[in-house]
Image (spheres, rainbow, N blue to C red):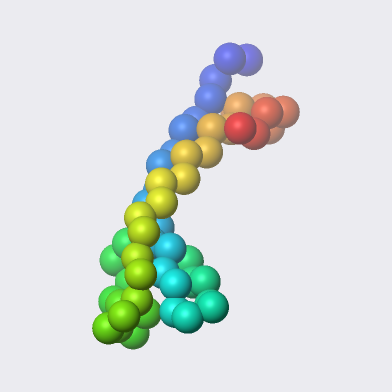
Length: 55
């Protein structure tokens, strides 16, 4: 009771023309080419130990 776990992760939202791609911060694939618009997004999850709540 009253035990929660919080996790934070960063991802990069890249736009290739009309295509949107979510990649990990350390992903070195070709998504980082010339003319690519990049935005960093941080996602935070919090889940109770008994699984009743997920925020």
